[in-house]
Length: 238
Image (cartoon, rainbow, N blue to C red; front, side, top):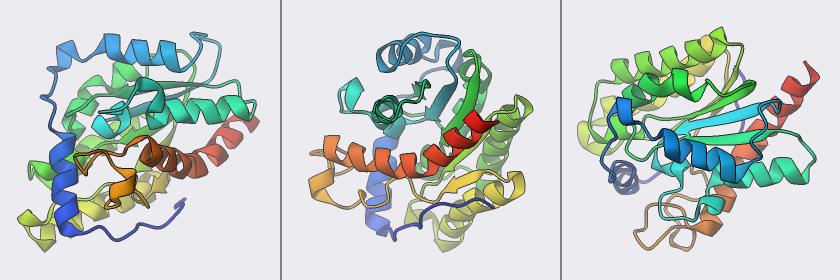
């Protein structure tokens, strides 16, 4: 199983705050899922060239960059890294604040409808944990998203998240294990914790103490890039 980096221990109280933040924005009905925001993100983050290989980031507020300028979100910073290193790739930010794994599944076909998508960064599940939704359902939704991507021969980077402690240790442990099990089952690259080195550090988070600030987003981008760059190189070589 490909796995890069190690998951940093996350305080239970912080997990509750983090997950609360992820669902602070009301969820958009699937039929209205912000085609415009995603399209605007694609246009501003990268050139609108359908011939370029693309990376789609499917996530919630952490990917959408809630509280940040669009250019400060970690998907935009990933685009900067690609540009600086001379990769002719585009990043499409399909992050929507409030999304659960079910909402992500409902819009995955649209998200992957961009021309020449080669990699999917899958960052979902935090809002499932906040709401105490059944872990098997979350696993089923994430598995279906991975399968849709793999059916299109799109590589997947799976970003793990943590559940709040108020549902008990059995729930939180099984929640965490979902990401590891899926990575093993589908042989996808696992990033154990998206907010490694950022969560719990006031200097790297916004005034709410929850969402990464610009400095924190830079670290998140570095964390994701460490896992993503080998995937880009492998895809380019193939």
